[in-house]
Amino acid sequence: MANVIISVKDLRKSYGNFEAVKGISFDVFEGEIFGLLGPNGAGKSTTLEIIETLRDKTSGVVTVNGYDLDADPGKIKKIIGVQLQTSGFYPGLKLAELIELFAGLYNTEADPYEMLRLVNLTISKEEHEKLKDPTVSKDEKKKIKERDKAGAKFKELSGGQKQRFSIATTLINNPKIIFLDEPTTGLDPQARRNLWDLIRDIRNKGATVILTTHYMDEAEQLCDRVAIMDEGEIIALQTPDKLIDDLVETGFERPKITKSANLEDVFIHLTGKDFRED
Image (cartoon, rainbow, N blue to C red; front, side, top):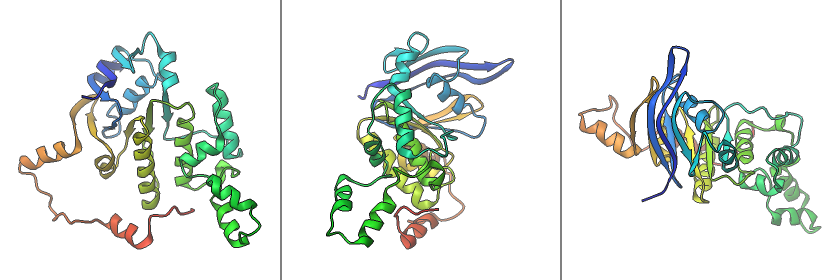
């Protein structure tokens, strides 16, 4: 059985007389993609912010990779990467400069080009060599340069590129655990699905991923397990398939016949899965 990398026991968070998180308990296993789902105001963001050491809890016990939240918050910060829904990057700085800035904040060294390659925002080493090759045509060099965003300013990026760059900044300290808050909000279908591939790739390289999303198809595609919260409580915790099977067993049927594809599949099939500029 997989090791528990995050353990939450009887977690509570109150604001005066209002209890936002009501004694929830759950575990996250090492190497899984875990989804925390729920409507607005369910308490999921508060829960994650407590685990991320960004918000104080009222009571309960939280351990992250064996570190107690109360005793070792500094050690927890060193092994996590947090991508927030709204990121305050300096719009006038180039991506390579921003990577160097964040590396300084983490007190570590990071190769901006390597970090940007992880999220497909710069060109490969082989393509860099092609730019120096006099036998390569000007048209081909132009196409290569257009894919290299290391020298682009953050404000010049498309929505999907901004989200991928935001994820790149979570990888600078080589974290064991990555938190993604609604990573595909506002993205077109191509950008969404390419970001799904990136999230899977991050997990496949050994990280544990915890994400929130309002897109249930996204949770179904990505998550090994999901916890569904409502009014500060966890009301379900299981694999997406098991939750769906349990619902079907109650006699639930969709009012519309389920097809083997949906409109988003049609859109991707017709327009392709390649990245697009805004």
